[in-house]
Structures are given as structure tokens and as C-alpha cells.
Image (cartoon, rainbow, N blue to C red):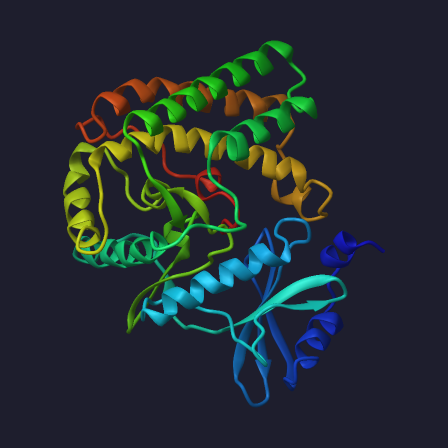
Amino acid sequence: MNIHHSFYQLTPDSILNAIESLGYETTGRYFILNSVENRVYDIETAKAGRIVVKFYRPGKWNQKQILEEHAFLNELAAEEIPVLAPIAIEGKTLFEWEGIYFAIWPLRNGRIVEEIQSNDLERVGALLGRIHAVGKRSQIKSRPTLDIPSYGLSSLQYILDKKFITNSALADRYEKNARSAFAIFESLTKEYQIPFQRIHGDCHKGNLLISPDGFSILDFDDFLHGPIVQDFWMLLPFGEADRKHEFFDFFAGYCMFADFDENWLKLIEPLRIIRFIHYAAWIGKRWEDPSFPSLFPHFGTEEYWLKETLDLENANRDLDDAISSPNAPKENTEPEMTNKDFFWDWDN
């Protein structure tokens, strides 16, 4: 059995044995937590209470990349920023069981934020500003960069090479719209000299936890080097006329700790398109995982790719308006965010 099949077929015994190999005494009680990309469990121990264990999907990150994520979390925690840093055992935060990397986190109680309330916007902005202020201090070492070659072209080429889109005319439309957005992304980053730095990478409301102690940001699994606006656009519906006050309240908190140029928001639509394409390629690359066909039953059908292409075309039509004025009032006609927007570990 290869390492991928071992990951797909993690058993209760192997999960608990991995934890006990580190000196924990488990009670045998555990709960599967909602994660599509990795395998994550809430495990009860006899003396340490409940802990969270994450088994990393083989092939996504290497050892250096995972350890860089852990180092960033510890850097943030040292500044008393409310994130969850992994538990160290004898100075190590990354372990291996049956060829699969895993790490342990403390369990933090709270609830996922469904909607950021108006009186919380400044606090959330300040939290993200503090994270970005730390992220700016040093350069990424081994994690990827959210740029066109790494995230855009590689995903597009994978989709085209695998011939997922069997209708050639539809494939041409898909590719044309993707490349158009890629060109605009690169043009904007050069025109406005948009800085890239260490960012969360997947910062949506599903990764925001609220408790009596306040807000925490979870799941830095997609931590990378990229433009800071990547961490904004899934949190708030920038550009909607009736919610423009959210923009001002959020950045009132953010700018207490980090710099911001309003022109950077012009990257929102290109980033959205890149995410659509990267998401489709992500599903395709994981199709051998037995859970994926049931989670994404329409993937690969002509209906699926027609919708994807129409989404790209609609997003490209929005680009002109976004570039001319990223916060100009517009009709509140944006579709509700879907699993595609929340990308990897969506709640199903």
C-alpha cells in the first residue's frame, strides 16, 4: 500500500497509535473534524484533555514547508496574536507515522463566525493587520508564491493537459478568459508596485473563530507569499454600495498596525479568477481520493465546465469596473459565496 492509500484509509487504531507513540494516553474517544484537504481529529486523552491532530495530505507540503508554517505560527504567538501554534514535544512540532506527517494542536473552544458584525469589523481588521505586520518582517523561505506561474498558469495547464474540458470550443473560451485575468493581475502588480509578503492565504470567515476571549484566526495550512489583499476579499464584500461602511471600519483597525493602499484592492477580481481555476485543478489532482467523487459529483461534466467558463466570463466583465474604481458603489448583484470561494476546506 502506498503512502496516499495509507492516508485515504487511516484507521482508528493507526490514528490513536500515532498519538500514543508521542507519550499520550488516549481514552479511545475521538471525533472526525471537517477537513477536505487533510485528516483532522479531536482526540480525548487521559491526562492532557482533548487535543487536535492533523495528518497532512501526502505530496502537498514537504517537511521544510510544514515547519515554516509552524515557525510562522510560533512567531505570531510570541507577539500574543491569537492563533493556534502547534504543540512541541521534545522541541519538535512535526512527527511522522506510517510515512504521513502529523502535528498536534491545543483544542480551542469557540464558534465559527457566520457573519462579521458591524461592531466587530475594527477588531477583525486590527487582528489581520497585526498578522500582516509580523508577516512583513522577513521573507518566505520554502512556501510557494501566489503568482501567475505558480498558481495560475500551472493550474490552467493541468486542466488543459488532462483534457478535462472535452468540448474544444468551451476549452478555448475557458483558456482565453483565464489568460486575460492573468495578464491583468500581472499588469496591476507592476503598475501599483503591489508588495508581496507572508500571508495567511485562505482567510475566510470559516477560519475565524470567536470565543469569550475574542477572535482567533485558524488554519494556516495555505500560508504563503502573496499580496495582502488575498487575505481581505473573502472576509468582506468590498464594493457593494450598501456595505461601504464595512470597508472603512475594517481598515480603521487594520491601518493601526499595517500599511494599506486602496489601489491594491484592484487585485480582488483577478485573485477571484485565479482561485476559481486553482480550485478546479485542485479537485482534479485529488480525484483518486475516494472521498472526492462523492464530494464533487458534478466535477468533469460538461455542465460543470460550462458553469466554470461562465463564471470566468462574468468575473472578467467585472474587471473593468473594479480597475477603474475598486470601491465605487455598484448594484448588490454579486452571487452568494459558494464552496468555490471558500476553496479547500469548505463546510459541507
